[in-house]
Image 1 (spheres, rainbow, N blue to C red):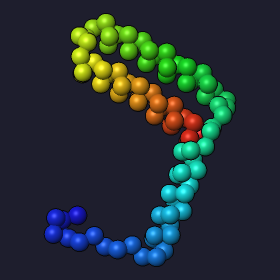
Image 2 (image 1 turned 90 degrees about the vertical axis):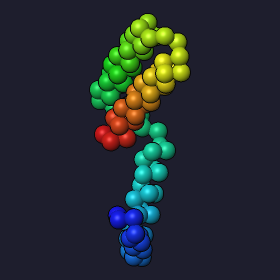
Image 3 (image 1 turned 90 degrees about the horizontal axis):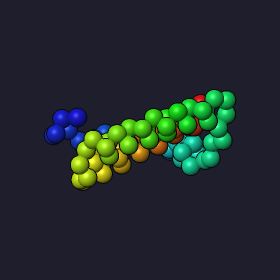
Length: 89
């Protein structure tokens, strides 16, 4: 959108569709998803590899804010990778 452009208002139908999509997302995101099929093995594989990388980060980098952030972002990456499996299969 151009800086001088005003956002266009949603129609009633668009607003209703947005609310339906938001409700579906809330249901998906805040519902427990029991592992099925090979999901559990994939969760373990992701966690094991992240743990390996976390040890590598601690071993090869000095204790610092950046190291802490690297570990936090790795933890977030695994969280979202697992959530992707749980929520979308």
